[in-house]
Image (tube, rainbow, N blue to C red; front, side, top):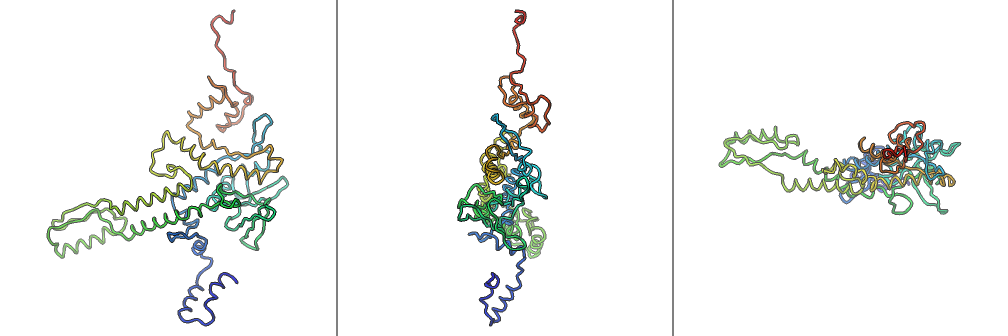
Length: 419
């Protein structure tokens, strides 16, 4: 019996007038209504708010955090590297996996769009899936799958299986070697990652409720900057004029803080912020802080009122990479090795994010770094000129693969050459 039949079967065949009205109300519900789908797919919370993707991303702090992580992962270069046999590594640009990561993961998404989408799904739902389209030279495309339509399970032979409910047609069971599965670093069962929409549901629900309360207060409330006192009694005409003035000039949030025009010697007394108002602001700020804790994004990068800019911007970048993005980098790199490379290829190939792109300082800072890297005065050097040129997005030059280490001219005492 389907869900709808089970829902209405309790009414029976003989309906009373009241039960008939209830049945007609249920019958008029549009199952395709997006609002109904969002309600049914949401997660109930103690606040009474049902949290889903749409309501969660309506929270400015949560959206900023999710967008920052997803866009950072999307924009960073992700290369397939190959060990060169001399202790170093070079880009495996001739490998099919490198083409997927850097050029074209599928026919409609760029690498940034694919990585950002997968990262966003993994944050919100704990898992991101992509179907691996087989080709002559391994995987030729990665097709993202909606995680809400995929059920991941561990089979009796200790291999993952994925039941994918297609938009049209029957469900299809995919095997482990057919799916690229990116999990969130934290997992409660060791099989699938935990969704942030699940873990942070209570904080998101309370934040939504707090915002709604503030919106209702601003929409329905009337605010004045103070009170007008009179030593005696106002005339009826003065009272009527004040009432009319109040309706025209002070109702609504757009008129908050306005003062009235005094009548018949009224004495003005300004109002300050009430304890209730201050408590509401503190509650909203607390909920924003709670959300920042769940995502791991530093508070200043979520546009809090911090003063950590200027000289502290580099430390913020290090904090973001080390404590927020690095676990995701490792998750990506490991699943690429596990899912897209053969066992033999894993001996010599590996995926690597270039997180240094997030830490580029000013041109002066970069110049000082490259001078030391190339072997400037007092340093031994660890880069060759072409590697430094690549850091600056410049092409190689002939002879640039030879190090400059120890080639600087040495000074000799006068007359030493004649000795």
